Length: 118
Image 1 (cartoon, helix red, strand yellow):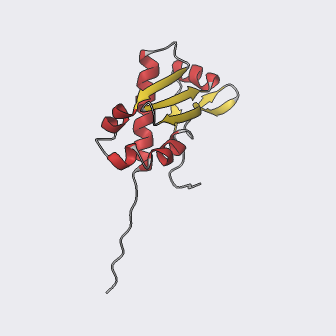
Image 2: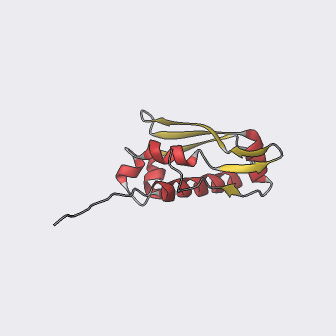
């Protein structure tokens, strides 16, 4: 008898949650060029999934930073840089200005293909 166990982390779901959180933040703070979130807020956003808010966070952010926005120069990534500041318990995002302006003008986020794994 052979039992097969597989573990499929919900990285794409959590990346989608982060991107919706960023969209809401940009809507509420239209002058923002970057965002800083408390990691406790991300923990709550992930429904208190401790692994996703800590160990797996970098993998989730690698997917989130693949989200693009249609601009005059083609699709551009919204997140130009992110960093996790464990000392101060913060998650920092810098945005691509062209993609940010497109998002503010009502362009939709374009999710990465979940079938393609890098």
